[in-house]
Length: 263
Image (cartoon, rainbow, N blue to C red; front, side, top):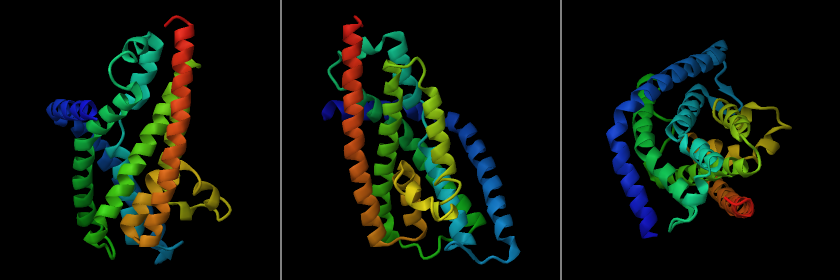
């Protein structure tokens, strides 16, 4: 455990030197938020006070916080590093180091997004208060519960992306799968909450990773209830158990395949 903590700390310190590079990400964030805030304001401009349970303020805060999650947790390490290590053969060297390669990658990822997420969160909340107003009925007592679901959702997202990258053991390029997954998370649950989709699709979407990665944590921000937190938390734990098992099997089989092929 200490070695992973050391990896987390060293990566965090290293990334403190590159805070300036986040400026471009903030510009993109501002542009996206300007577009979506104006889009939803236009949708609500026909005197619609509530749409599918969302007032204009709740909808804008939903989109804002979902975008904070989207921008604040994006990092190429989960997509590029594993695939490149497998393609170049560096994986044969890395798997022989005194740590689990997959855990190493995830710890590095979590460390690299820590400062980025905090900055996006601060700036995003400032934008929201300035242009939208306070979050309706928000209670600071709920923050620890929300933080738990945000962390677990981020971890689930990381494991899924690792699993897709591990497919590079069998296919030359896993980026198409990453692209499809990326757009699923962006459109379903980030730009639009689940309630905005047809009723027959909502139960299906609720069974996808969207529910535990973006929709669930964001929904708790604008409409918290202990019952919903428990549902989301249980779903996240189930997802983690299943995903860890799947990725573990894929990685083990991939390493065996690598060894059989002679590295």
